[in-house]
Every structure is written in C-alpha cells, then in structure tokens.
Amino acid sequence: MGDWEGAVEDMVGASSFWGGKRVFITGHTGFKGAWLALWLTDLGAEVTGYALPPPTTPSLYDLANVGSRLHHVEGDVRDLAALARAVREARPEIVFHLAAQSLVRLSYDDPVGTYAANVMGTVNLLEAVRQDGGARAVVCVTSDKCYENRETSRAYREDDAMGGYDPYSSSKGCSELVVSAYRRSFFSPTDGARDVPRIASVRAGNVIGGGDWAKDRLVPDLLNGFAAGLRPRIRFPMAIRPWQHVFEPLDGYLTVARHLWGGDPSLAEGWNFGPDETDARPVGWIADRLAELWGDNAGWDRTGEPQPHEAHVLKLNCAKARERLGWKPVWGLDEGLQQTVAWRRALERGAEMEEFGLNQLRMRQTASTDA
Image (tube, rainbow, N blue to C red; front, side, top):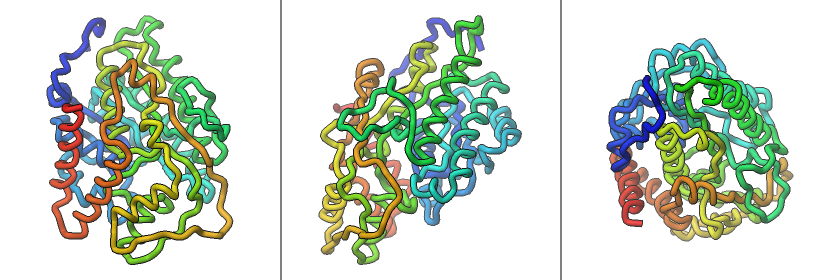
C-alpha cells in the first residue's frame, strides 16, 4: 500500500475524496446505514454492504432503491467466517461498522442477542479487518448511551467512563472497549507496523430523519400515529436527549474517515457527534413540535403503563470534534424536524424516494458549503 507518512489526501470537496474509494459498510440495510450508503454512492464511492435483510417493512433501503447502487452481501456480523470472506473479497480501503441491535427496549427482551450482535459483531468486524490487512481507515459506530450515565446535566466527553444500565447501553460500552483493545493490541503504529489501519469509534445522539420505522422509537411512533389519525402514547415526556438529524452524525463519520485516511494516529480514538446544547430537548417538546409541523389536529398522550428503565438526561460534549476536525452541525433541530416531516409527506404523496432523499442530502451539503 506504500508509505503513509505525510500522505494526506487533497480534499478539495467531498466528491473528489470519495470518488472511486472502495468502502465497506456493515448494517447498510438499516436506517443510518442506508442513508450512509446513499450518501457515499452519490459521492462516487464503490460501496459493498454487508447486512441482514432490512429490519423493518417498509424500509429506507427499499424505498430509496439503495440496493441498486452498491454490491449487497447478505450476512450476519455474528458469523466471522462469512464476514471475513466478504471483507476479503471487497478489498475495502475504508470500513464503516454500523450493524447492531439498536433499540433499548428490545435489549430487555433479548439481552443475549443484543450482546452477540453489538459486542461479538464488533469483534468479528475488527478481526476480519485484521485478517485481510488492506483497509486504511475503520470507523466503528457505537452510541451516546455507551457512557456510564450519572443522570446529571453535564454533557459527556470522550474520556468519560463507559457503562450502561440496560443491556443495549452496556453492550455499546463493551463495544467501545473492544475497539480500544483491538486498536492498542493490533492496530498501533508504535509496534513497527506502518500500514496498520487507523481505527476510530463514533458516538452520536438521538437521530431523526426520513425512513425510520424502528419500533418503540419516538419519531417513527409519532409520525406513524399522526398518519393514521391516532394520538400516540409517550413513555417519558420529560426525558432529555441530544436530538439531531441523521445527516449530522453521518457527516461526522465521513469527516473522521477522511482524517484517518491521512494517517494521523492521534485521531484514532473516540469521537462525539451531537447537536448544539440548545438542541438537547425533552421528549414532550419534540412531540409537540412534530404535531405542529404535521398539522391535521395531530396530538399525543402520555402512557400510564409501567416502563423499563431509560436514562432521563443525556447530553454530549462535542468540543473535540469541533476543535480538532473542524466539524459542526449544519441543520439544527428544528430544520431536522421539518426535513423529517417533509420526507414522510413526500412518501405519502407518492414521490420517488431515491430522488427525494438525494435532493435532501444535496440540500444539506449546499448548506454546509454556505455555512
């Protein structure tokens, strides 16, 4: 692969960087993974996706025709042999690992499956990369819930302790520890290896956006209810989360990957990508604003049924990404909510969703250039 020292790419625009790059994505049939695949293929990357079938029907993957834009490999990240074979055949230069069990409430019903997918899935991905030896940058996506949540108003920084009350949150903390161990044990440039991949982990807040149909997730539940003329029931209206449109953390992931490509080992670490602090809002505020944007007398109610534990306050400190990567969110929360409703309304009126999604991506990129 050649000498990496001083090999920083000429990044005159994202398209010039990503054009022709071989990229491997796990979990490309999920909500975030499908948007990432759509974005990368629009930028000219040659994408291979490895995932199980879409987790929901309908799905963004199907509606936006994502499968026609890349090489799809159906497989489970818990299957090391199959995953390693897919990585070897794809010969990726850059890897994004998004495949996961991503729901807190489901983790209570299936803790074993959650740990298997989120912990061993990460082990298997990194082992596949280690065996292949050709990747140059790897970005492992975990969650803002990886931190040991003390239920305080202080925003969590990248050097805070890993933890997790529920199986999902705990599994993401474990995944972070796996990334750290593999980075230091096998991907450290200090051991004499010059072409080892640079490995980063990325942690994002609560994402919103068109094409999310995950069960027991706030925005999909609200929009599905509004579309059906129902009043959705909310579990924790006072819980505070760092809300952001899905394009914002995805832009952060792309930014990290480009910097890792440059070969700076100091960037191979954990990164937070969240909204401005003013966009950390209560669930009830989000529900009210979405109802207002939807119109048609939409509204919601609070459920009185007992619920499993979920954190009440969670915020991210993203100063490091701003200072060292030059990253910042472009669409604020209200713009993100408007674009989410716009996507769903477009679907209902029969729009071509691949084109609509690409137009939203390009609109956000234009806003980023103008910012």
